Length: 106
Length: 247
Figure 1: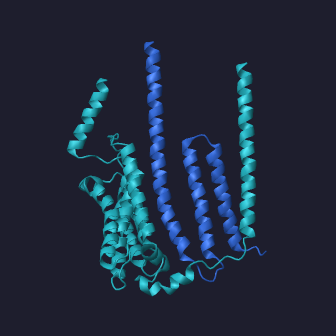
Figure 2: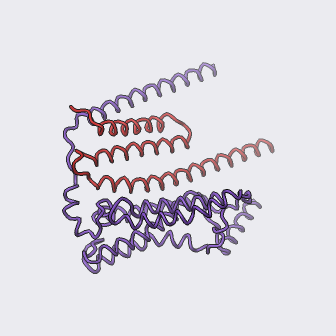
């Protein structure tokens, strides 16, 4: 087994994926979960680009194209997740206000 | 009693996170083992892409993959972006924000200087995409950045533009792509199968429209809520707010 620079990139990608997964599981806050998913996505992109490099003789453009597409998709999914998280926060705020009101009147 | 329960709860949670950390470490070890001993990497599809490059209409291999061989990826991705904007606008309706704070003259002149430069770089990247690194996504990202800058500086330019422009342009990207795809099917029999003679011009036009739609969609996603509405929709929202207020 020869340890090449490609392995360093690949292992870094895997490490980022695992760090993101840990954040997704262990953090309770929604914003941290969204950030964790983004870190996971970065790890996957790095891994894909490493695969594209292959043996270094002929670079495979298909994973490159997939990463470009993936970046745009991850931006839109992040935006949707943030909008949902904002909605959750609004509703929690509303519920708190209602509770406070009920307590004040009762 | 309650204190004891909460201590037990905390202990259980700590044990749970420890267990998940151990499992994640094992997963990493397994994946790293697979990565290091995975045998010789294959050359992938590089040779097939090179062999068909002269039929694709462009010289850049990545652009050829994105807009010719696997153009349906890009088509679906345009729709994903469009769907993202629709969902964000549905979830977060227009709210009149508090009046914009006055921006400094340095920021204002920086914006005036940077916006034309960013549009120029975006256009260059779009053009460069046909024979080197670049293309619709990169150009779209630069244009999106320009939009974000305009939003942050609350530029008066945003209020000058007609209000139908933003939804119209965001819809135009995926729709135009779909029209081209179906048009290619009607003329040649294959969905998204361009003819060899017209491929180059079709790809450049498609990329220009897609870059504009991507840039506007990214800026709209950054804003995070629906833009100011037309008068009739605004009146409806006002009525709804009033009803809610009465309840």
